[in-house]
Image 1 (cartoon, rainbow, N blue to C red):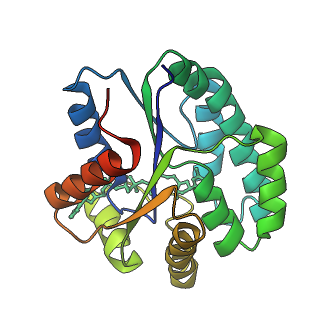
Image 2: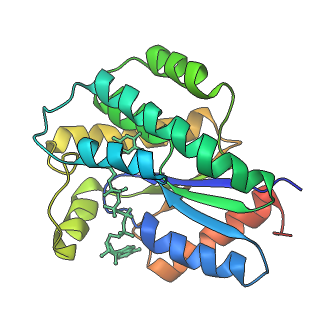
Length: 210
Ligand code: T5A
């Protein structure tokens, strides 16, 4: 049986990586083959593109170029890792996917939704996640969490406050446009509660893992 494709989305420091660890343990505990991955990245070629996308000055790439580079990485990721895993019955959990391009390069970066949709269709046809969990958080809180972590800021973390405010609204709008696929979670909750609500959403929307 084909596996399931689950994506986590949200602004900076929303808690995706933290939640993914719990979801992986929960699914593995039920005997499910789980593949955890991330975007941009996930395959050797896509990780090379991640490096040039996340490092350097904020104006290194225009939003359109970023979108095209994100999709170049995404096609490699889908063809070489995600599709083969789903075909063998594994569940794939990706830290970010196409909604990040819609939000970051689209709404926050100014590339029209129509243009991004055309890039998606040309690159991946009708390939979308089965379920997307959107971690909603005040960007000030999320960015403070990433600062507290002590790592160097990525290009995107260094964009201005209004960029991050637009991002938050963009993810909420994506969820409202596609309620069958997307579930919003309050990322201000404690990690255990976020995980409890995420598991409930997976069971309700995808059925008990088997
Ligand atoms: N991008 C990506 C685009 O612009 N377009 C695209 O198409 C794609 C795919 C990726 C960047 O690329 C951009 C978006 C991003 O800017 P990244 O380094 O992978 O860069 O950045 P993020 O995906 O934002 O990941 P982060 O690691 O910064 O954030 P997470 O994974 O959401 O957060 P996490 O789990 O690491 O938590 C951050 C801190 O908060 C704590 C954790 O312990 C950690 O210290 N924490 C909580 N604290 C309190 N309460 C909770 N519920 C907490 N959950 C976690």
